[in-house]
Structures are given as C-alpha cells and as structure tokens.
Length: 315
Image 1 (cartoon, rainbow, N blue to C red):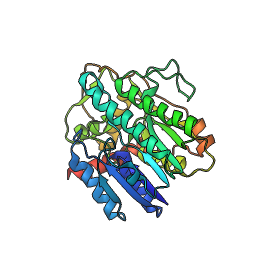
Image 2: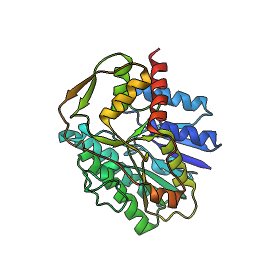
Image 3: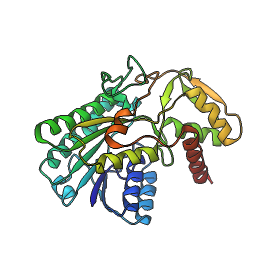
C-alpha cells in the first residue's frame, strides 16, 4: 500500500512515516520545510526516514504543487502538514495560518475526491474546544476555539466533514491533545522545559502553572493515525479525540521533570498568553469504539523517553 504523508519532516509526520515504513508500506512524503523552527531539525528527521528504508520525498507547497501528481497511486493520505502554534496566529500572522491550515486542506480535499484514495486522516487539534464548559470533553462538546490557530484547525476539520457529506470523501479527523515525545518541536512547552532543566536554567512558565494539560505520547498518536487509516468500515466524516488519558498541571509536570533529570528545577513565572486555555482533557471512548485505540504510554514514561532523546542530542 502507498501512503502520502504531508508534513512528513515534522514531529508527528516523521514518526508516522517511520511506522509506515516499518510495516512495509511505500511512503511518499511532502514538506515545504518552512522556517517556523530550524529546518535543520526537519532535515535530520528526513535522514532518519531515508535510513529507515527510504521515502519518495517531495519538497513543495500544498498551495501550489501538482496534487494530482502527488496523489497518483496513493491509497491513504495522512494530512499532518499545518502551521502550528497558538501565539504566532494573532494579528498579521493569521494569513499564514489561513493559507496553510485552511486553503491547503481544501485544495487537498478537492484533489482527493477525484482520486482513488481510500482514506484521508486529518490532524485536527484539541484547540477546537477552546475553554470547554466541562471536562473531560467528548466529541459532542460544543467547539469554540480560543485562538486563531484553533479556528483554522476547526475550519480544516469542517472541510473534511463537508467533503465527506457531499462527495463521500473517506475522511477521519483526529483531535490531538498536546503531543509530546522524541523529535518534539523546540517551541513546544515540554521541549523548552527539558532543555532548560538539562542546562540548569530557570524554566519559563506562562501564568501560574496551575494550567492542566492532557499530554499524549507521540507513539500513541501514531498508533491512532494508523488505526484511523486502516480500520475498515469507519464512516466518512468521523471525528475522534486522541488524548493521553491522564491530565497533569504544569507545576506537577515540572516537579516530575526534576525527578527524571535527577535534580530540582527552577522556574520563572511569566505573563499568561492570549489564546492559552486553562485546561484540556478529552475522553477516548469513541476512539476505542470506532478505531479500537486507546493510549498506552503514561506521562512519566513518555517524559523519560523525551528527556533521554534531548539529552542525547545535547552531547
């Protein structure tokens, strides 16, 4: 089977492509290699994929590339490419998010409906819920994003649903909850916290540290991606949460990090940021029922794996 992975050089994209290669699938990957963070990190991920068996890599932009050529011979699409991050999505930055997360998704869906693709897995986000009225959130919880980034991810999800409803495009949207693990982007909190702890610098915390997050290990996210792609008889337009199953405050995470690195870590409180919600947490009942998926890796286990990875890169 041939899979197309968009955003293949990124955090979740590279792990997903690696898993597909290990299962013996042919992988075509596309990535524009933006400079939102150091492109050298993405190139490192691509080298890992070449070492893992090789991919058919295309460096191009989904807004302009020939999508019919890109989808030629493809059975399954993992649409993981996106402009990430909440804080940069405000003001003039929003145009980049609208292009990468909405227009590119619509263009890919339009091409997919005229192709032989059997399933399209879309990387949505828990950001679509915003400040939910109750927790843990399930898929029937009203969506009301609290950031422009969340608005664009919800728009992409709605596009997947309407292409499923109107044209039968076999989409499955996965609402990821705070993915972490080896190869995590350097701008993400877990990566920043670990880097500061390993260098014995104060960890910068936005707000007072009482924020609650539902962290999901990248290996579990990959397993959800594969289940969404290969589980038979999943109705087009399906939407499911992909959550870690255990919530933790930022302060508790910092204390746990000190245990993992073997010394107390210092913190430095910083002003709360617009768009940051106080709490995230999702149920995975629908994922278990529809995809046969549930998380396997706890926060302490996953944190230890990410610390080991970041420590190895710092040597």
